[in-house]
Image (cartoon, rainbow, N blue to C red; front, side):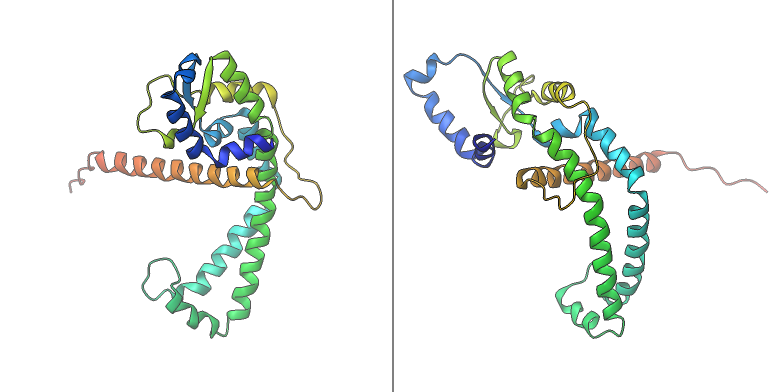
Length: 232
């Protein structure tokens, strides 16, 4: 696991070293191909994670509902200080919050929202961590089956040929190795740092997908012909 995580952090260096080595005669003796893989996408697509996220939505429904309610209360208290109406509090606007008679209530709500969010996210990270623990084995298995000698992240390449992405194959391997996961972390649970980072990447990926879906729906609604006004 240590060697694998170090490789993750040094992807850019490893790619440069591989390209440099490719120019040497000894590298020509290595037979195989270069492939790409996206860790977050591989884990998102697993049956285990999708099932876990659905189960978390049910198991932690009370916390999620409470968080939504408290976040709405907090937003209502902070809205008057958003003088430029951009939906965010700038540094120049924070002074007004601190001097507000509701400052103590605002602080309390912020702490409560953070605590509820941490409860739900801990369950999600715990699920991700269990799948991520099997990622090195799944990657190795697919690489051997596909005769891959090097695997890099897609963002590190300027050109990727069709068929180079082995992410779906890794997902298939993970589905076999981790058919299901637990969603209730143990007491005093502290997630693995790498798993926590993967979780953040997954959340960003899901957010981008949600925003894209909303944009597509808005575009489709805009293309629909307007309903003719009813005659008298």
